[in-house]
Length: 110
Image (cartoon, rainbow, N blue to C red; front, top):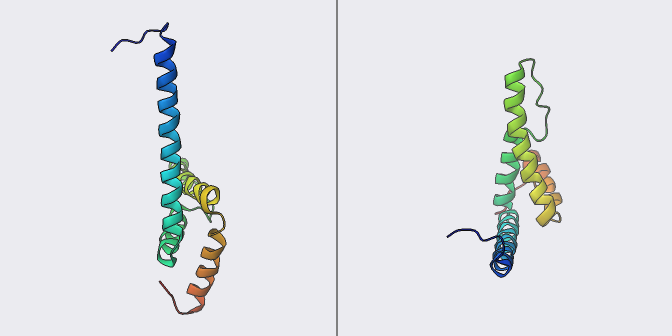
């Protein structure tokens, strides 16, 4: 189907459909984040991924390519951390508390 720049009705319908899809995608992403962070197991998974991505450490390397590689990992981890703070910031402190208990040998509940 060819694009007709004078067909304003079709353009408006396409814009509304695109906005609706974007809203549904955001709602699904928020629900997924909340579901994952709602259990101790999910919070452990997220924390482990953030640690592996290097969010909590420097990405510096004396080799430029290695540092660029590290920064790519870190960027993705920071994006994930941003989603957590955007959608379920009230659950992030619980993960920090969980991590403290995990390291001190407190019993892990599921």
